[in-house]
Length: 250
Ligand code: PEP
Image 1: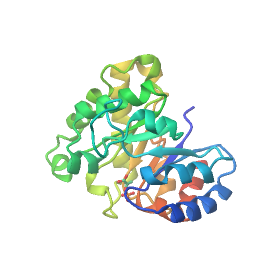
Image 2 (image 1 turned 90 degrees about the vertical axis):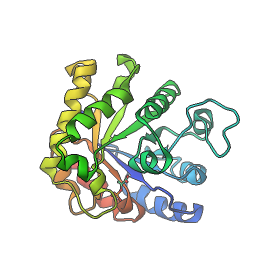
Image 3 (image 1 turned 30 degrees about the vertical axis):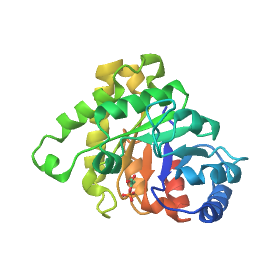
Image 4 (image 1 turned 60 degrees about the vertical axis):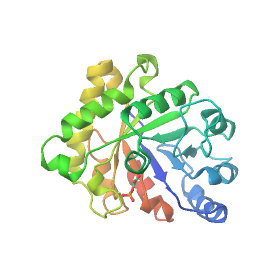
């Protein structure tokens, strides 16, 4: 039985003061742990988030990591620095990083491996553009993204990985994939994971939907057999994020 997880992706939003205010409200409503809850916050908010959430099970995550352990990489953050701050999960391969920062499947794979090595859960994002979907090549593309991201990750560690399906046409657009479209691709991702690691491991890997999830559509998405939660952008910046967490509980 996979435990659902709802992860807020704050992107480049929230000062420390805003972090404190929102997390103080949210943590009061997330007292039981039937669902995992995480916040992938900007680096500058990690310490504040850790302080506010100290007495809770809510996971503090990051949105990026560098592949190298240390050195002359101005502006970058290493896995050791994340570990030192108490980060427990980290997004890799988000479409915005692939698009604006040239993050390739190979880089995604390296990042996933350094995170696993440090016992930080990688949240690996994969997904297609509208054009790729319309050309009918989206499943082939997703197969490639998933396989390349998982390359050389040992089967003994595979169940720690989270894979997030983000149809790019539904990111920050207000357009959500229908629950059937989302389920179709999430179940396909599980099938690919089974090709790599076997069915029993694939049954334990959590696969999330990403893209304009809100308090109105969350319940229907979470009812799908292969959707184990969501990575939530815009809607995780408001106290109504609690309603999305609650939708995952039912
Ligand atoms: C995201 O890009 O990670 C995301 C989930 O965005 P939104 O929910 O705002 O579409």
